[in-house]
Image 1 (tube, rainbow, N blue to C red):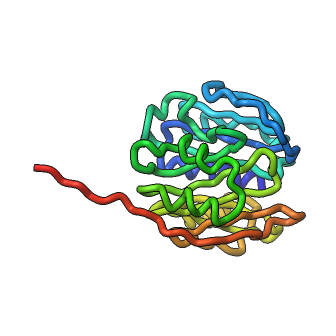
Image 2 (tube, rainbow, N blue to C red):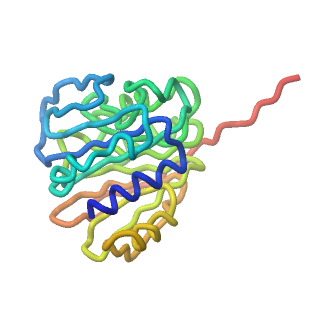
Length: 234
């Protein structure tokens, strides 16, 4: 499983490698999480280790993280290109820590709704209808994955407009997500992990996946994604 995470992180550089990061959870719930400084490249805080920086995934990942990854119930990895703000600043590198959430997002929503603003709006919302209300207000292309540090046994995923989001399961019932289904064929070729299914989520899909004890979908809903309109001026 750990090998698959590293392979997926490396392949994610195809969609942008201006900055990268990982968040590895211990599984310990944090009811009153301390604020996480956004500009610290390597930090252990309240049940998770966050490492990020202005480099491709291979420049951020270290074998020293393997023992923690091997025991992490949830691990987030992310690479990004410069969409909004400088991707070369640690504060703009994912995963982002906002109001008790740790999350990653792909592509970019319209100005005024960068990743930090989106996760701030999602903080404290748990019911699918409440989450869908926030997601329907977003304009532009994007996919999001986030974890509430008070509930580290569950992951929330959403695919808005255009940006791909694939969910896969291996033969040992571990669950993965990525931007390209081809990457899971590479995982099969390069590791001992054997993905048995890989499903591209439809636009406007929200999932909550809980590890109890194996990953399973515990909540699902649909929302209407809003695509940015083309504007032209003469």
